[in-house]
Length: 363
Ligand code: NAD
Ligand code: GLY
Image (cartoon, rainbow, N blue to C red):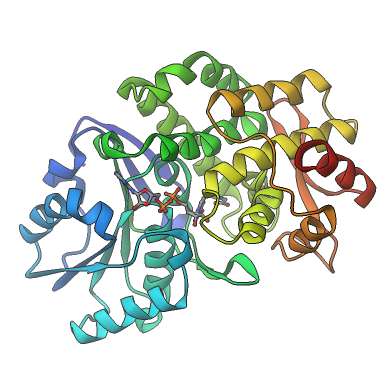
């Protein structure tokens, strides 16, 4: 790429790739340099995003591909399911897509996760590119190769590790994102501080107002630093045999909230934000961090306009839902806890302490 934007690299031997971050990328032909041409390029999106941005990507692709088609999936977390996946497969087969066809996921984490999984499965694997258009997708879901759909019994339960060829994060797409989605994305940005970089937590505290106001310079730094941290983690543990689990800080409680209320009732980022408040309190109750550090995380989540109290599902239901989490082993729930500012680990926790946390934050 010869353009003057930020770039972060995921180092994964023969599957490494670049994340391009900047304004105006969807108008820069150079962002596609080095990607395979294929006879067909397929954009997978949803109506909300496609009406705003598909024409830009189409114009870029049409200058290099013989054929470009658009698949629109219904919008929303509730549609991150088999039916959307089948819709992609059907459209690909009808269009005569072959092994050289490249899929472009244009949208947020829902479109990205479904498209990545479709790419992993179609003809046993075809190339795909992530073009994330939400803050959450730019700082997290488009990077690292986790792809999945939900099952009614659990979040992201059916999926594959499958890396994209490139990530193209055009910051200008965030201009049209609703405020609630900016806050949801900030949950995943905040996450990186306590788990990996305490100085970044301080930077977020100092720049939160600028981020909420969509200041491009602040957003560019938040996206870049988040991707750098994620690249550092994924580069060491692509398939989550250990370290990568720290990226799930707040997610065990959060996934229980999402599944317990029904997918889509709370946004994923909202559930993660509230889940981080609970996981920080758990870390404190386990004697790992002081109350002030847990409070610091809670305050930041609140300032990001995210919920800090969970829904009243009942402690038994929370525990039941959390046992379905992918990090559980033999029915034992394992939580990402903060061991020290900027350092996280995966551990079990006694049920009575988890119940105390739930009583304090979701009673
Ligand atoms: P989303 O994909 O549902 O997008 C949020 C909403 O914003 C949607 O209505 C979408 O149509 C709309 N939208 C997207 N871009 C827009 C734009 N530029 N302007 C206006 N509207 C726009 O939600 P999300 O928060 O992006 O992603 C959440 C999903 O990501 C969850 O399913 C979660 O499980 C998944 N996720 C995956 C990973 C991973 O590593 N694969 C990591 C974190 C989250
Ligand atoms: N979002 C968690 C991960 O990518 O591992």
